[in-house]
Length: 164
Image (cartoon, rainbow, N blue to C red; front, side, top):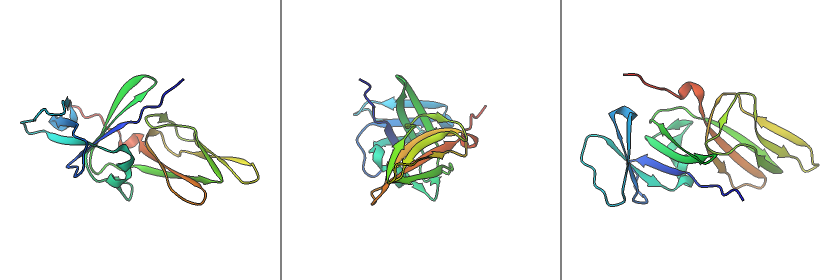
């Protein structure tokens, strides 16, 4: 049986948080996970763990409003993604009588590939494709009469590896 693990989300200056902390130093080159009671003294940014389902509270008009780190597991491998404030995300809606997500958070996707299958009331199947290469950061289920999801994707052009 394959157990899906919910990612951990850490956000800068979080009002409500779970107590776990991460420190970002040297512009993201150093990431330190602190113990629950461990204090930090330094000039790095402290990010606090928040509820993962609140991810979209930190995105406004497709732009990330606070520095964040997402820690998730893909294929048994722990991955950490640092997203700086101001990063542009692509929001792709998927709405239908029945919606079947094909990709999960943490998945790397290629432009033109399917991310969800939509089933109509008549049983017809259509697909939602992504227009960009990138990484699925979050999948939000929107309460509505019909099934409705929004995929939050970090486009490849927003992924930067800074050299010294």
